[in-house]
Image (cartoon, rainbow, N blue to C red; front, side, top):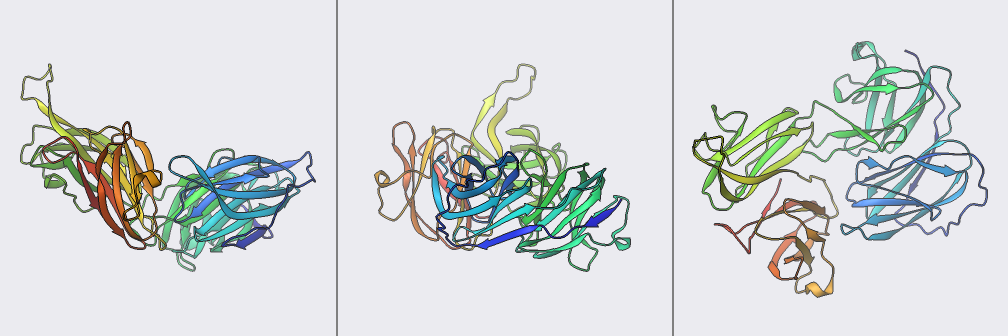
Length: 458
């Protein structure tokens, strides 16, 4: 397999807290154009959006990209906005004019934080490659691993016998590379070392195609972990899996009318994974290899009666909560003459673990079957609900949402969506910078309304 390094691509790095250039749509439109992707790497962001010349728009959440966009050559004004949980948009004080006057690939990357937005517009201006070759570009935006060696090798090759393709330093790229079309093993190490910190697995480089690999911080338990996104073709970015990162699981018991439960993986013949977990109690996290797992929740000390049975897949790097909720309702199985099972609800909820320095990261999970759809308010102390809009409106049972308030003192109020009746609140809460808190609304102990609001930290 051959690899040829080209001159660095054009890199425009604009470190912008705010920008008002005036802009303006270009008048040099041509018949030719190129492809563009919008990538969101703003660590404390909601969903962000990009608009080109007040026409083409695209959105992306953290660690993802938009689908491929096509543009017409010319001078283009690009503006940005954020998408609120209720779907409303708010313009960001950030814009840039870019002269897109060639057939080229363009990556528009927002990174940094919401208080210190940084913009990189990366244009692939490489010459066309030879037959049976493709192009590869690597960009690093990780604060945790700001310098990495990149290996693109035959899967059978040992790194001790290989040379790195390049070293990428954040926030930048080391250029484009022409490589033979083939399947390659993509791996990352610390500079000068051969111990792999991220194995992205096999990547397929096709003839006359371009693939871009973007490194960003992974918000999991491992403070050094990264994610790697592959951007190629019309689909949004694909996150490459690093199978060396374990999944982490905890359990929260929201069964309001039973003393305590046990949690098993697989059959109940052995010891439980979690034992004697009372209503409202949370376990710590346990590490599990990425795989499919059959979870069984039983009354404490009883192995042949099941509250909850479900198989769930855990991916590398997942940090999740298995939560059961509701009442232990008897279910009559006509094909089973033994005692009836007591069935409850349950779900795997992804935990949010962003390491945000400028605010808090909160999740709210509706786990109270006795309550209908909910409106959730986070208010300043003494602020009436009539003075603002909810953080989320009409949240259904066993759904959740995330949001990122500034550090400070607040009050939580939860209303029924249909008639604005207050279910809970005002409940005083305080958040520190960088704090991560998960709120769960369960039924009241013993069952029914109004319910209990419990908070947990990962």
